[in-house]
Image (cartoon, rainbow, N blue to C red):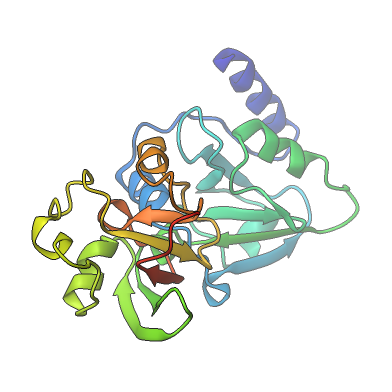
Length: 238
């Protein structure tokens, strides 16, 4: 399959589009980006409208996964002339089609399928703008009463942030007998909403929290990926 992709990329390059396929080997920025954040602020998005050939060499963000592509090299072409595109930018959309969670071949096909006589609308973002920065957390009770509005950093552990902001996460004896963030007691259950694009909870959490709604998470196992609303001490499913 790899050889087929390489041949395809060479044909694309020869035809004037200058894309390439080079597998990415566990880049640190890739790992941090995929693991810790999914917050795409509109003010950070770079948009261009350009004709083919684009002059961009693209590589998949994570090897053998549906994680989109990034700009590996900016060559002579319409994208370079905009003065906005630099190496390392992550491609978000092609003609308003979200390609963040597409594999390499799908992204390339989407670009190639764009009409030759019309501009291609592309949007990009710097990975560091996604993986780092602030996240606003609205903490409420199960009846909707606002407890606190916290400004945290993407990448922090939710349990740590809640406790550091004096949020009463535990009740009764669990205050003293909880597992201390080991993910074994299940007493730090919270319900999280308004968290579009966050990673789904792992299977062990789903089993641990089977008496709670599907949106429930263990605060001790939840990395803050962006803005969200957190309900503390959510009710169990009856």
